Length: 259
Image (cartoon, rainbow, N blue to C red):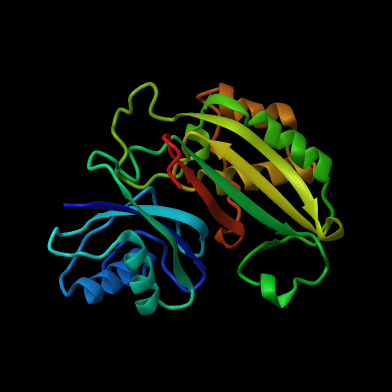
């Protein structure tokens, strides 16, 4: 069965996250419904990962095994799916991949952006798409806090539980490498873009990283205390989780030059 890798962008505000669940109205549910309409048969897809309710994606990736009886090309699938999807979900690209490729397990890295609006008034086009923080905080100190995360660390204090974690967890279960974490100011400094690049991220990890760094930027936590969450396994779990609104899955990376 030919395997196709899809790149999917979506506005997460109207949906209950990516992952299919009872009751529907997730991005996966809607995409699979569109695929069934095109194929006239149900078809399951496998994604690179989940996004929570309200989280957006510029480039979520998923693959599907297409029955050999279907003669549509990858580009035909892109166009056909977009004809059946709402405007808030778009298939941006599609390509054939080897049978042993997996959207999740073949991934080598991910990139996330988090948007913060510092202005007194949140523009309406950013409602549900950025964290509104009109109070004063130190953007330079925020950047220093993000730099603490760079490197290979045990991020268990920055991971929420889904309920399916092994007990006891292997020694490397919470080990992740952050290649880069930085802040860029846009629109005269009123919009801050926090960018994270790593080999993998756990449930709510980016939102916990952002929320905790924001506490440092407000002077409510020291850089040393922040660092202790990464070095001391008996340190308390991070308690400050940024809202889903400002989070964007920007890219899922693969080897071999896959789009």
